[in-house]
Length: 282
Image (cartoon, rainbow, N blue to C red; front, top):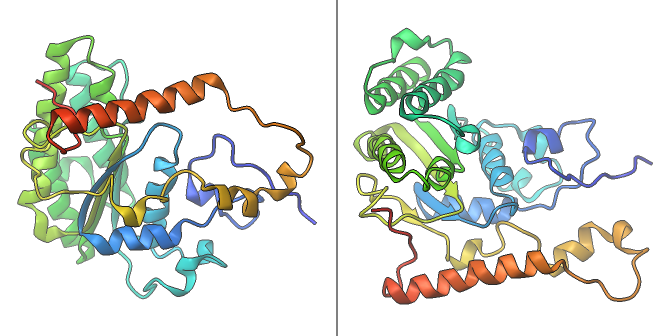
């Protein structure tokens, strides 16, 4: 019998569920399908290390039709595998220590990396203006595949949060990203599904002013257990790792403090904004 392994540090669904893998995967595909059914353009935020990246890659596998990876999971018999879509996925967690010019190049490189597998070259879409490059890329991909596009963004706020010590650079990054996300609304007809995730929620008058069609699902009841593990899930999926544990399990104090601070900030922000969850970047 193959010993199951904990997916410590593994945030990619394709890696966890590849045929020879023995990693444990807690089935979240019911919640993911529920989330997809709620709206065609969604946003959700969760704390770091809660499984956002794994969620994004699972959504990618669904839309790309990787049925073999979902054997035994809820999605195997509850997803339409006859339909597949081209997926563009951005990961901004690596966009660190960049100046404004470097950040623009990073986005163009991300577009190129996604389109190369479809045989689309950089010169076919690149423009000096990032939103125009993105718009051109979407049109090229739609024309090439004759299908609507799925657009996924992981850690959308990483460049902003890590630039707050340089407010002018943060504003420049916000303008670039605002233009990029504004394209989502302008090219709405080209998308089958859009999902953006991150740790922070910047209010619509700020980063998402030009993409105000995105529906914020952060506090939606249907996806309350989308990320992280419930007590029941821990007992059902990690039994062999818990059997040898006796006595009192003590959570790390830093973890508890971090979580208390996170939820305290949410509650305070709800008071300040009159019930609207969001952080304003001026």
